[in-house]
Image 1 (cartoon, one colour):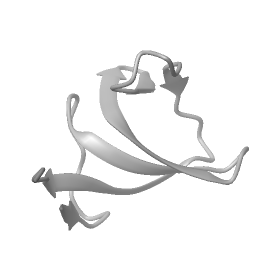
Image 2: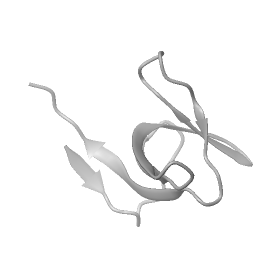
Image 3: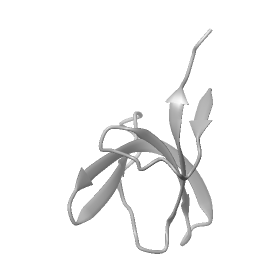
Image 4: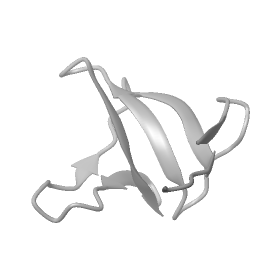
Length: 68
């Protein structure tokens, strides 16, 4: 898996990594932009979509992933 650093501006549809400050949890989800809001959508439908808050930290975007 390749990870782009925080220097890359994420776009809607990118798979991103965020640190959620309220729960101190790191998540990897699909970013959905609907200005002025940002959402993190899980690929597993058993989990809920998260609204990104101002104190959450963008850590990077997945550049490439391979499954074996």
